[in-house]
Length: 129
Image (cartoon, rainbow, N blue to C red; front, side, top):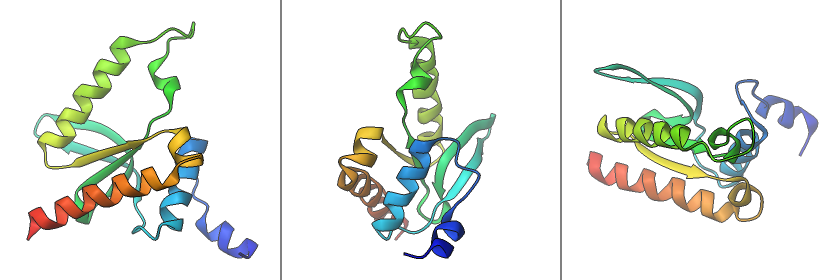
């Protein structure tokens, strides 16, 4: 692949290396390109910014790095985990489906990331018919 192609693919909206690797894997799997860092809302206001969004499929993808669930001292931050679960419930309540992927899946097992994204999108396409 030529450098020009890589430069065209680069996107400064990615907030982590995991997001960039995940988006590359989605591209390799020929998934439709997602919008990045989209703010979603419901009747109560802003739910939050999601890493990847496919509006047509009402699908959200989240790069799930473990650092967001750790306190400064490295211990588990259960409050952060709970907040993330509540946020995900709100996304689902307004009709979005959510899939997550980790470093291990993006780097060592990219087929898992692809299967999750396709499964969610297929289900939503059937539901829209």
